[in-house]
Length: 355
Image 1 (cartoon, rainbow, N blue to C red):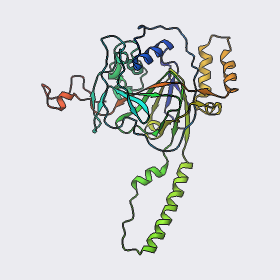
Image 2: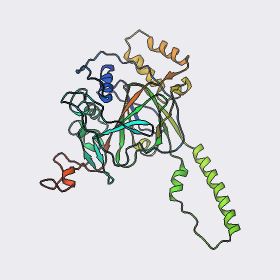
Image 3: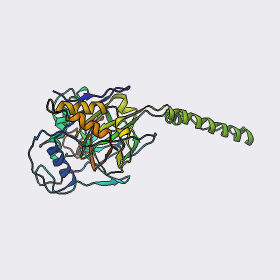
Image 4: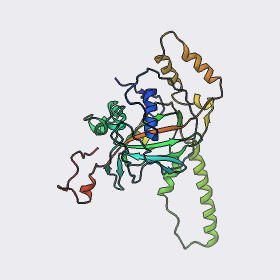
């Protein structure tokens, strides 16, 4: 039975699964992704579910090209057949942070040329892709058939965030289906969602005045008035931006769908810590503490006391966080050999399918 919890927001489209992985699984994944010495394999369900993390605000319209909307190259597993790679995956520095992709290359036309995932994502414990697929959030497009990347996400963006690092508000573009699932490892953060300012859409459709018959004085006056009008429109559209912040504790899986994912901007403020006011302003702050009460033994009452202490304090510091943003490419899955005319039958690979 799914443990996804719908977050009540003015614009629907957010669900979250607290403690999607256990603390033992979290540490295993962090070590595997970071290329640390191989951790002890095997599930160790210790039942612990507490997270000591939080987050804050961001805002402003803008973009960031670190969103996977252009052609990207997946990283092959650097392992010796074990569940965990013995060396680093191939992090790349991008905009001051480390980032990499798994699952293949997204072509300019929006197709996916697949490449292997690390085994812990799709064939060995803790098999993250299969777990995400089992939530059913991608069944609308895949029909609920198959397992792992056949039924769920087939591409993954891995980002590392150190304290003080963030990402500018952006959209992921049309290459992916309107559903994304992000697993947070190591630390909390606050995901900042903002409606797109109307002037951004207007500016792309407006064309410059090319009339050369007006005199220079009139043209100058018109240009000045146009700039004033544009500035007023920008200010009004920014003031009208809807703001929504979401608390993402460590080990949580957040799912964004529909308009909230496709049309709204999402980003993370470059903060080293989060004030208590910012945390309490998150749409799911109350729900997080409701969950804490649910997972504690009946009669302990620890969650209420902890919440009182947290909200009486100064906030929470951020730690190193690794995010696995898992998405499904909207276009066709292609075989690279066939695309280059090297395949025997010239067709798509046996496993190729349309999302």
